[in-house]
Length: 119
Image (cartoon, rainbow, N blue to C red; front, top):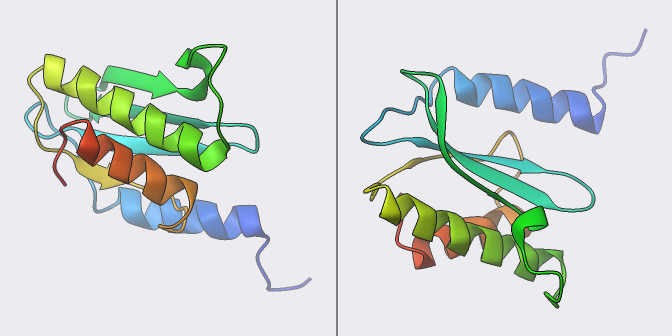
């Protein structure tokens, strides 16, 4: 048996490690990111009550949205930031879900900052 990890196993291992340290509250929820091959999903989670406060995904974008997946992620982040502001959320903890912080994940984070969230 080989001791090397698949890409997915390595991501899940990083995700479990991060989730042991990152915790969202009602005042400062966790901004959780999930990236699939086709799109990106993000949500604000209050871990104390186990509830999702707001969510946004590439599926919520208008049908006529033009742009690559990175631009798509930035728009999802911006929409989530605006939804968070409506709920009175200003500050969040960023949970990148074990993904490396570049490309689509970084674009989503920058979009959320543009939408009004700080982290």
